[in-house]
Length: 185
Image (cartoon, rainbow, N blue to C red; front, side, top):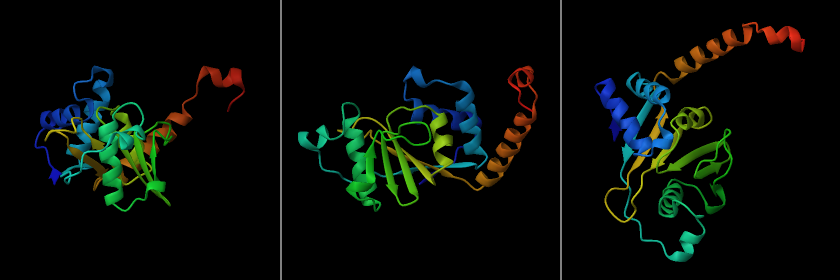
């Protein structure tokens, strides 16, 4: 189900509740504001999907998930498999666009990065440069509180990408005093 916030504050609260989840290490006001505005302006769409009934994992299954966020990674793996990924196409803590998503589904040229629990807000934009969607699995496996959120490229994504490219080109043309020292033109 697509989530359509009506106000900036509502969008900002969604961003903070979904991505920061009370973990102050990930507070970044600038990125929070940017992502909230991106959702309001349909650069990025946000959906909440229902997590189907998943059997509780045994300890052997959890050992394969690493040391942290085992239950969330287990759920992410099951959801990726239900969405057409094979075991050989699902990776844990694998490098992707300069970061390490908790789980990465990789099939041919299709990628689905999955973050479990709280994460840096800028990862959403970074990951969407390379993938069509980014999944967030919230904490608390053993009760109804675990949720599955999907960030996708929105109607205005291409327009945003063009503007970003123009801004980057302008920044490249700015001359720095170091350019002369380093012999750059």
